[in-house]
Image (cartoon, rainbow, N blue to C red; front, side, top):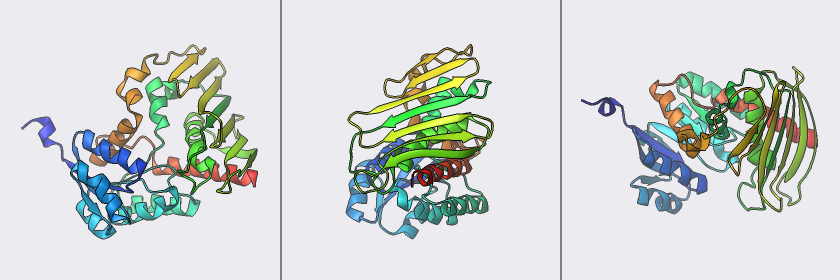
Length: 309
């Protein structure tokens, strides 16, 4: 028997048949060692439209869905992440949740506790972390002194259930926390709700216990997309253009110039999901982003929101 044949084929299910649910469902179809068997949505016709072409079964009954799967991805609107993930964890199913993990610290804590009780991995889809790993940026042996992140998008009707902080900025918040070992101690900012759905643009500065500062500038009502980051180290700077997928490095530490040609650089979402599956199988000690790390990002994101109120 080949080593590949010995690998347990995990039965995967996706909660939420929207755009992101489609992305995740297709990853489960593409990845080895896993089979997409179910799609859950409260709108059964919507679930069928996604599940049918991929050879999976559509569900609008959560209990029946959970009974059919081994692992669950939650890709609902953000305000419903915690409810779906908690149901799956209480059923003993490992969970990969799209970001944010939850929209309240209490819900995030409940998910972490449920995962611990079930002995099941809890992962969160902060997939930009995969890009950082592909570049080698997380391996620089210096603590940064400053980070400046700009993440702007044009107006859209999607993701309006949460603010721009929980929709876009939280990516950069997670990256800052991945780079800095200290905890944030103060946040000051400004922002506005231009469309009445919660904050649409925010600019804040967070100060950390070790003196590190992070400036986050995010908008979902910009004229053009922009996603850049500058990380300042004692020995130099790294400037990243996430849209062009390029960077400039003046530190003495080598980064991976052709990171876009690596599996992680080519497909961050696929590598993030693959990392989750490895954690489920015990082939990796943890997923790319843990529930605890996602909760830490949520805490800072909510502090950002409060600083603007």
